[in-house]
Image (cartoon, rainbow, N blue to C red; front, side, top):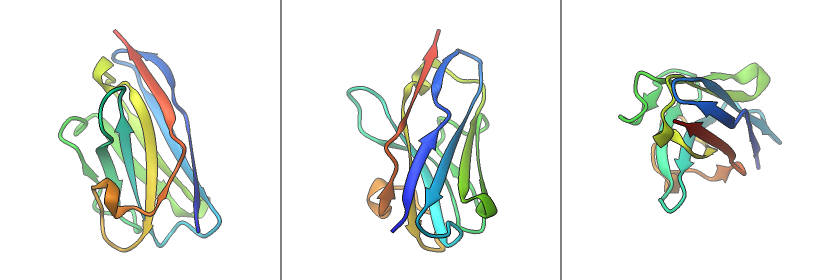
Length: 124
Protein backbone atom coordinates (compact mmCIF):
# COMPACT_ATOMS: atom_id res chain seq x y z
CA UNK A 1 0.00 0.00 0.00
CA UNK A 2 1.10 3.52 -0.69
CA UNK A 3 -0.63 6.68 0.46
CA UNK A 4 -0.52 9.84 -1.64
CA UNK A 5 -1.04 13.41 -0.46
CA UNK A 6 -1.18 16.34 -2.86
CA UNK A 7 -0.39 19.90 -1.86
CA UNK A 8 0.44 23.23 -3.45
CA UNK A 9 -2.88 24.13 -5.01
CA UNK A 10 -4.44 27.54 -4.69
CA UNK A 11 -5.75 30.61 -6.46
CA UNK A 12 -3.55 32.28 -9.06
CA UNK A 13 -4.04 34.80 -11.83
CA UNK A 14 -3.78 33.81 -15.47
CA UNK A 15 -0.15 33.70 -16.52
CA UNK A 16 1.00 32.76 -13.05
CA UNK A 17 2.66 29.63 -11.73
CA UNK A 18 2.09 26.96 -9.11
CA UNK A 19 4.03 23.90 -8.07
CA UNK A 20 2.08 20.89 -6.91
CA UNK A 21 3.62 18.19 -4.78
CA UNK A 22 2.61 14.56 -4.40
CA UNK A 23 4.10 12.98 -1.30
CA UNK A 24 4.10 9.22 -1.04
CA UNK A 25 4.18 7.26 2.17
CA UNK A 26 3.77 3.69 3.29
CA UNK A 27 6.35 2.31 0.90
CA UNK A 28 9.32 3.69 -0.91
CA UNK A 29 8.16 5.59 -3.94
CA UNK A 30 10.92 4.64 -6.29
CA UNK A 31 9.35 1.56 -7.95
CA UNK A 32 6.17 3.48 -8.74
CA UNK A 33 5.15 5.25 -11.90
CA UNK A 34 3.26 8.44 -11.08
CA UNK A 35 0.74 10.44 -13.02
CA UNK A 36 -1.10 13.70 -12.58
CA UNK A 37 -4.73 14.02 -13.58
CA UNK A 38 -7.28 16.78 -13.22
CA UNK A 39 -11.03 17.08 -13.04
CA UNK A 40 -12.93 20.26 -13.68
CA UNK A 41 -16.49 20.78 -12.48
CA UNK A 42 -18.89 18.83 -14.65
CA UNK A 43 -16.14 17.03 -16.57
CA UNK A 44 -14.39 13.71 -16.40
CA UNK A 45 -10.94 13.13 -14.98
CA UNK A 46 -8.30 13.79 -17.61
CA UNK A 47 -4.64 12.95 -17.96
CA UNK A 48 -2.15 15.75 -17.43
CA UNK A 49 1.35 14.27 -17.11
CA UNK A 50 3.16 11.05 -16.23
CA UNK A 51 6.63 10.01 -15.24
CA UNK A 52 8.26 6.61 -15.01
CA UNK A 53 9.78 5.25 -11.82
CA UNK A 54 13.26 6.29 -12.89
CA UNK A 55 12.24 9.87 -13.61
CA UNK A 56 12.83 9.52 -17.30
CA UNK A 57 10.34 9.59 -20.16
CA UNK A 58 7.97 12.30 -18.90
CA UNK A 59 4.85 12.58 -21.00
CA UNK A 60 2.28 15.35 -21.21
CA UNK A 61 -1.19 16.01 -22.49
CA UNK A 62 -1.20 18.29 -25.51
CA UNK A 63 -3.06 20.93 -23.52
CA UNK A 64 -0.18 21.39 -21.05
CA UNK A 65 2.85 20.54 -23.19
CA UNK A 66 5.45 23.28 -22.89
CA UNK A 67 3.81 24.82 -19.82
CA UNK A 68 3.88 22.03 -17.22
CA UNK A 69 6.85 19.98 -16.04
CA UNK A 70 6.65 16.75 -14.06
CA UNK A 71 9.63 15.65 -11.99
CA UNK A 72 10.38 13.42 -9.06
CA UNK A 73 12.71 13.14 -6.10
CA UNK A 74 12.71 9.50 -5.06
CA UNK A 75 14.85 10.20 -2.03
CA UNK A 76 12.11 12.51 -0.79
CA UNK A 77 9.30 10.22 -1.98
CA UNK A 78 7.79 13.17 -3.83
CA UNK A 79 6.66 13.94 -7.35
CA UNK A 80 6.19 17.51 -8.51
CA UNK A 81 4.13 19.25 -11.15
CA UNK A 82 5.45 22.69 -12.04
CA UNK A 83 2.72 24.64 -13.76
CA UNK A 84 3.62 27.83 -15.63
CA UNK A 85 1.65 30.18 -17.85
CA UNK A 86 -1.56 29.05 -16.21
CA UNK A 87 -4.85 29.61 -17.98
CA UNK A 88 -8.41 29.75 -16.65
CA UNK A 89 -9.09 26.44 -18.39
CA UNK A 90 -6.48 24.82 -16.12
CA UNK A 91 -8.88 25.29 -13.21
CA UNK A 92 -9.62 21.87 -11.72
CA UNK A 93 -8.94 19.53 -8.85
CA UNK A 94 -5.56 17.95 -9.49
CA UNK A 95 -4.88 14.37 -8.44
CA UNK A 96 -1.73 12.31 -8.37
CA UNK A 97 -1.81 8.57 -8.87
CA UNK A 98 0.70 5.76 -8.59
CA UNK A 99 1.25 2.21 -9.72
CA UNK A 100 4.09 -0.20 -9.08
CA UNK A 101 5.37 -0.58 -12.62
CA UNK A 102 8.26 0.37 -14.86
CA UNK A 103 5.83 1.63 -17.48
CA UNK A 104 4.62 5.16 -18.04
CA UNK A 105 0.83 5.20 -17.74
CA UNK A 106 -1.66 7.73 -19.04
CA UNK A 107 -5.15 6.48 -18.23
CA UNK A 108 -7.03 6.51 -14.95
CA UNK A 109 -7.76 2.80 -14.97
CA UNK A 110 -4.04 1.99 -15.08
CA UNK A 111 -3.36 3.38 -11.60
CA UNK A 112 -3.91 1.66 -8.28
CA UNK A 113 -3.43 4.47 -5.76
CA UNK A 114 -4.86 7.97 -5.72
CA UNK A 115 -4.51 11.06 -3.57
CA UNK A 116 -7.40 13.17 -2.34
CA UNK A 117 -6.74 16.02 -4.78
CA UNK A 118 -5.79 19.68 -4.51
CA UNK A 119 -7.78 22.56 -5.97
CA UNK A 120 -6.19 24.83 -8.56
CA UNK A 121 -8.14 27.93 -9.55
CA UNK A 122 -6.88 30.29 -12.25
CA UNK A 123 -8.62 33.63 -12.49
CA UNK A 124 -8.80 35.63 -15.72
